[in-house]
Image (cartoon, rainbow, N blue to C red; front, side):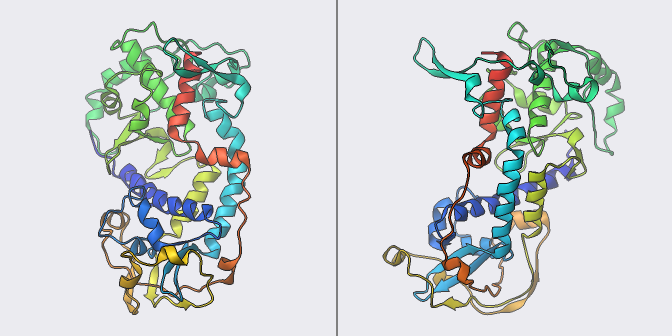
Length: 396
């Protein structure tokens, strides 16, 4: 399959941002929104930072978001800057505003509306969620909405809508396969919301319906992409082919599979222009704002010691090998942030320290004023989306 460099850049960009957002989530859960660097060692796997790479080096790449400083005992701490704290508040506001749409997409009502579901057990005493209320106006694909709009009494069935195609500009073989592509686009297929258990696995109808399911799932996501291993867990519930990756690679005018990193991601081609999303929801715009604050330019100076810092968990912080004794304190020559791809691959590059002002606000207690809706929206994973969507489509 032809590599689409722009979408590889998009993969790399969001991979870097996701690590920074993970650290921000950790700090948000701390009572004072500060944490000792050595306590972050347990999260190496989540941010994909194996030893001997230093967590402090990774944090120093984003001084506009994170502050490093030492207390009078020499313990190295990490906190968020004022700008980062304002971004956290903005995220909470956007999440609250977006929660209604998120509830619709999370299986078009899963868990946000518990009256639509109930827990049942099968003969093996295994618990399942059962859909007990069907909403016709939600049983219409995003592709149908663009063409015929929403109908309150819609009944899912056969569709004849062609999928938008987008190939790399330098891909010449598209003319060779023009006949096959046209034949595929003209073939009718079953709606993702219609009962598909009567289809024969491996048939042309089965495969095209699977393409429709993938198109719908990717349309639900805010970044129009998913990690492929999330899909395999629900292959049977979604009535999808066993060799799902082969299907995605076969239809690379509709989808694009990025093989960067340890986990593959699948993109919806039509949603991107180059490496940028065409339509961006507020949460995507917020992530891009965070992304602009990652990395630095300029001369780096030493970390100052804050002698007035409260001695929190003093006994637990003594002993054991740590990073703080190895942090370079001397200013070095001017450095500039590397390119997007190099910054992800060269985690051992030496980054210099910047002067971090110790704000007295870090000594104040920050109340965690999260509503239940905000918490639910922030913790919704792709697996939950797929699980609920499988229920909605199969009308369990």
